[in-house]
Length: 478
Ligand SMILES: Cc1cc2nc3c(=O)[nH]c(=O)nc-3n(C[C@H](O)[C@H](O)[C@H](O)COP(=O)(O)OP(=O)(O)OC[C@H]3O[C@@H](n4cnc5c(N)ncnc54)[C@H](O)[C@@H]3O)c2cc1C
Image (cartoon, rainbow, N blue to C red; front, top):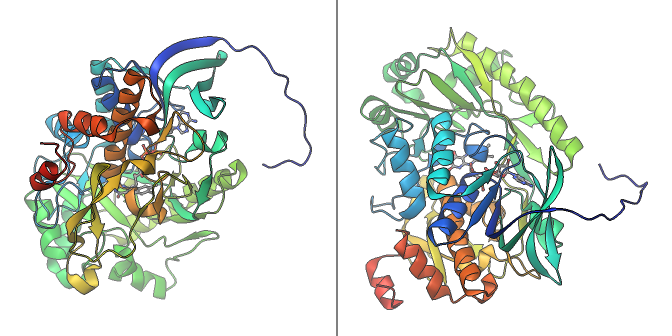
């Protein structure tokens, strides 16, 4: 909506609603992890969420699968801290399978409703002030230094002043509004939907009778045997995203003209990821794709409406063609279009995937978390390298503005942008940003000037994983 015509918005006095150590904008998994970490490190924290729901893409977006980046290729833990705590607490309240902790499990399938509830409960337990329906509309910037945010609520505009601002809005809204140098990569968006009344056991039996039709090597599912063990022994139904592209039911229907892959600007309607948990009686469907070339509200609105139509098109196909889905119906569509990648900051460091000999660790002294490195399944029969790669602190720090940290995985500084967008990586970055913000607020220096060792010590106290023991000794952190 870039109008050429312009009018003048008069300046005005804005009431200061609150002063705090750390303000976090965005209540997705990154923002919640940041708020918890900052609070546990001793800060007063306000969390702002523009919607009424905490969890972002993971809940409002119905993306009910935390990619299993918790274990390396050998099944050794490469994450701890808040991400692991969230998963463990989710298990305890029946929101995830207690059998998730295996390298054979591609993703921790979650009950998005229980996750939403849990995040709110954890934030309240810690004493984080949660403000929902509170969009952060602009950072308050004084001489290149972020000092808080303006919010716009039902009762009008207000200011929240803070020592440090954490931007967890998903698309780095505050960094963008502050004028930080940004990067853009066209990404895809999808509208997830939930179907009730699906008989997942019947679908499993269908594949059991013809395992050769099960897709191989996609979305961290090696093949039918793992799929079967996950469902039968662990209660996790994980049919790979993209699997529909080789699934005979979809492909036969395409050839017969009973189903199309593309409708208008939407494509790969046959992608068909399915995520379910035994006992839930619902399944999440991840099918449609829309290429996001702009965050302009006209484009996003058009995309949302097109995706809604596609959800019913795909759901109808499931009902008429897929075993176990004869009585299934859409019971919920995502509140928001889920955008995989779009806008990100140019950070003071950038996390990349170039020039990495697969088995060699990539280490840095300012490590604030570790990430698994993707390898090509087709070539190696594995999804991850045997080693993790260190995440440097500078990827959270936008250039040219002080006092601001960006911690959504898709908008921190990585190249390409997709590298840390998985939910577990988002929570790792969130926890790191929260710890860094708290240390900065406590010591009265800007986040970029905080001694990284203080941040690392705080993270280790909070159970975060920064590398194997020998590496911690090398860094003098044990
Ligand atoms: C379609 C899709 C499929 C995916 N599949 C997987 C998968 O299978 N496994 C996996 O691990 N990851 C997956 N991902 C990635 C992962 O889900 C996301 O990267 C992650 O959930 C993002 O979390 P976040 O907290 O950084 O951002 P979001 O979840 O985007 O949260 C941002 C929050 O900020 C709020 N907000 C936005 N602007 C403002 C503002 N100005 N003021 C206040 N609040 C604001 C939003 O309402 C939202 O709640 C997928 C992503 C998408 C989109």
